[in-house]
Length: 171
Image 1: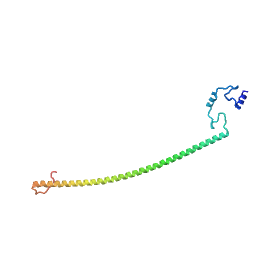
Image 2 (image 1 turned 90 degrees about the vertical axis):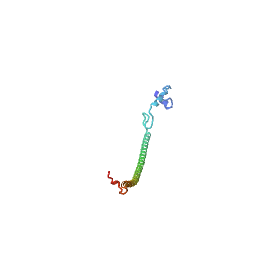
Image 3 (image 1 turned 135 degrees about the vertical axis):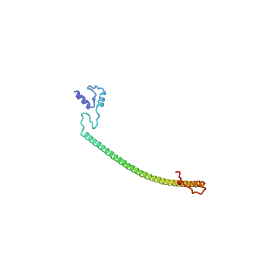
Image 4 (image 1 turned 180 degrees about the vertical axis):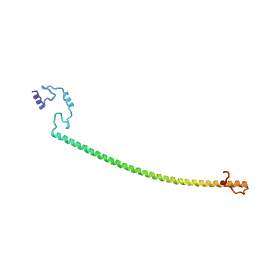
């Protein structure tokens, strides 16, 4: 009889689950605690003891398929972006290598120019030095000859031949 009364009251909008027969109510905390402890109700997680209906099951399948499609689409987009970035990096690497090769060639050419200029200036310097040395040697010979001529003139009364430095007997 209590069952009939409580089910009849519920169907007519009477006292709810927390109420006791005779109109007495249980603590208002109990229903809240039950709600807090119950697992969340989502299309994937139907309430305990309830089977999903056919429509809910189909909607869940559609949602899963859409989610899988979104994941695949996003994955394809990311893969395409990765390939695009790799292509850009490869292109930039090629440009850098070309620039390095061009710089190396230019550096080698400049080095060859510097070597040629250095060699030419070295040859010119050597030629100038050789001319200076030859000039100094000629001047030294003339001075020695004039010195020998003076010595010979003072010894022999100026009648002797001038002696050259090569004819020294002291050496």
